[in-house]
Length: 224
Image (cartoon, rainbow, N blue to C red; front, side, top):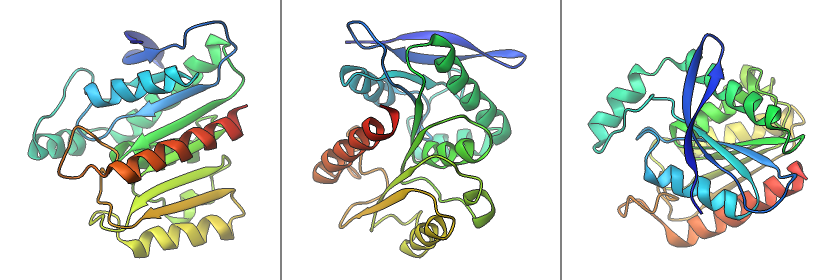
């Protein structure tokens, strides 16, 4: 199964994205998949195809508009240059596009690394989503956490230097305080980017497999 590159409207411009659609007849639940700081690389397209194989229409917006990085320094520069407000606007437009496909009344959002933080931010700032899954994305502050409406699944590694356990725990407590349906799961021995099988130094097969299982279960529970 393989998707295709499309262009979807985002206010006054168009945004490219990778769209993967399940075989057979719908309706299908839908997912917006948000890239890591590397860009819309093969790994993210592969994950979109995996979601489609599980019965989810999946759109991965290309927030870098064609640019990709191979090395961390390149990725850091692209991430720093990203207009965050525009990225959230494009993610919100991707959600809107999936709603207009009329394949399902419900849309979820999943993001990894930079995309995990953007998934949370988009959900807190107007994206009409019904479930959120954040893979090792930067947690929201208390003010934005209070804006969340959708159930949140957070997946982190305890060896993640970019997301110390203290801030993950604080996020968990704030979600609880705000009465937001959530589950934060921390994998022992897993680093940042433990799900990315294209990065052998960080990939943690056991954590990745369990996180995928949890992600599918979360989306099926809240997008059915």
